[in-house]
Image (cartoon, rainbow over all chains, first blue to last red; front, side, top):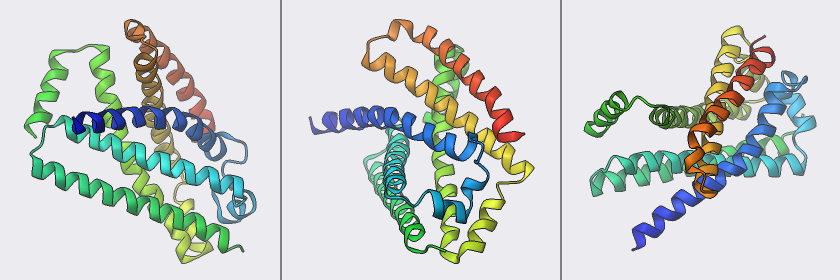
Length: 119
Length: 122
């Protein structure tokens, strides 16, 4: 059945993104919350000087994609457990898709903004 | 809502570490996803310029901001470690050892919690 296949991919990708997020979030948390320069690293000038290299931008795009997918797919997994009606399922699915696209789009736009509007 | 009530009843009936970790995983997952929206919203202050961005970020550089970040760190850490436990049990067929893995992840969590006090709060 198609539904079973969809369920498998949702489950499988949730695990894969989780494993990738362990690495990504570790880097993110170390840089912005644990390292000695963690306070300065959050501010505009420091972000422009340290985090606008292609490597960091690529890292943050990947991290954003992973975290948005993992978060939205996780919420979908919880909703599926509630055995909602077909109509409610459809509504929530569309809402989550919309929220995910908006979140990812705004996140990408923020990253583009940082790389193009240097001080 | 009925399903949610049933879930809480299940939790009260089956008071075991597995059930508790299941609930903690879900609650922290939802909380961190909600925070993701707040995080993107905060960062979007950059559209209003450098000063607006720095001002938005400075809101998190207060005592209450540090406590908020610490709670966030705990939520992410507990979700991450429990997630590793679930994935390891799922992919490597270690379901029999899931209780041991739970205590192991709690041990790692306590280390992160202690280190976090010094690096995030203080």
